[in-house]
Structures are given as structure tokens and as C-alpha cells.
Length: 258
Image 1 (cartoon, rainbow, N blue to C red):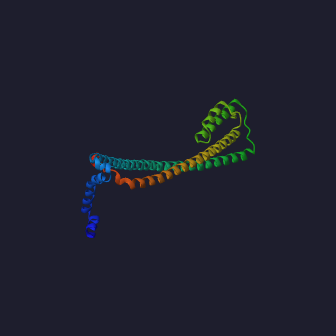
Image 2 (cartoon, rainbow, N blue to C red):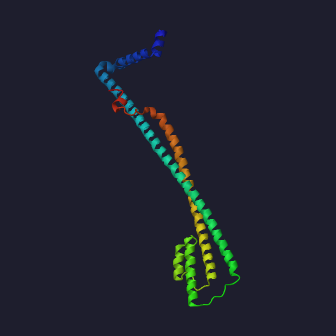
Image 3 (spheres, rainbow, N blue to C red):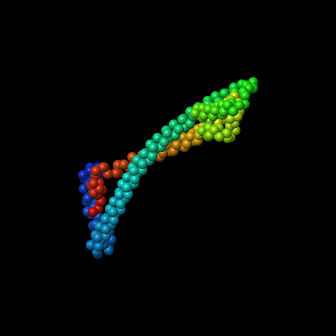
């Protein structure tokens, strides 16, 4: 008896036979378990079949739910993986913007310091006074041309805004064509230094904002990378439940009780 029991519990084929026998004897057990079932075995058999069908349907529904959850987990892992990859590209772009902004800050600083040094030398030279020139219409015409050319040249080098050219041509915002050319040159250098200082300040502010954008992009990249790793692990844990590509739906899932 022990040998038979060991064989039935360990060998695959006997175990299948044993399960089949249990299934076949289940209706008889159900009928004999209740006096009411003994009096009405047909009704008891119908109830038993209904019970088995409902149990199988619940099991089938649970299997379908698990398959659907596995499919959703795999789809989410793919989507968040793509999002993490795109966030990596974006973080690298923002890093590049920040580095370029830093280079613009350095260039603006050098331009401002050079302009400020030129203005300082011009002030030192102006301390010796300006040479005398006769105040004739020809001289004033020359001074006007000198001012316009000096402002236009400075704007072409990026040392003055384009608006300064328009103001100088119309004699607005402090541009006075009647001044001596030496004085006009000092004024041009002074305004250029002030303009380049403002350019540097704006570059510093732009670099600060680019740095903050780069930090946000990096945090977003890292967050999505962690989420992608978790989603991938969850998807791999249930991927075996997903039918293989090309498998027909009927072949991939057969109801346990039909």
C-alpha cells in the first residue's frame, strides 16, 4: 500500500490518473454527502456541474486578468523607457545650452573689460585737453561725420546697439555732433563700456537660468530612469504570462471548463 501511494504521489502519469478518478467520483461524493441529494441525484448533478463551471469561469477570469495586467505592465515599461531615453537627450541638450551660456559670459566679460580699459585710457588722454580747431561750418560737418562713423563702427563690432546709431544720426540721447572729435571718441568709448557691461549682466542672468534648466532636466532624467528600471523589473516578472507574438488568441488561452 505504501509503494502504491508513493507511486501515485510521485509519478506524473499515476498522478494524472488519480486526479481524473477524483474528478469522476466527485458527483457521487456530492450526492452521497447530503440526504437531499440522494433523493434528487439529477438535481445534485446539475448543481455540481454548475458549481464546477462557475469555478472554472472564475479561474479563467483570473487568468485573463493576470494576462491583461502583464500586457499593461510590459506596455508601461516600454513607454516609460522611451520617455527616459528622451529625457536623457533633453538633459544633454540643456547641459549644452548651459555650457554655451557660460562661454558667452566669459566672452562678454572680456569684451566689457577691454572696453572699460579703452575708456580709461581715453579719459587719461583727455586730461591733457583737446587741440584747438576753428569752429567753422566745415569743421562742424567733419565732427558730425566723425561721430556718425565712430558710432557705426562701434555698432558693427558689437560694442554698441543698433539703436545707438539711429540716436546718433538724429542727435538724441546725449549724442552731440558739435563736440570735438577727441571728446566724441571718449563719449563713444564710455557708452560702449556701459553697453557691454549690461550685455555681461544679461549673459550672467541667462547662464544662471540655463543652469537651473539643466538641473531640472537632469532631475527629470534621473527620475524617469529610476521609474523605467522599476517598470522593467515588474514587466520581466510577469512577461511569461504574455502570449508569444503570432499566437492566436484561441490557442493562447483556452477556458479551463468548456
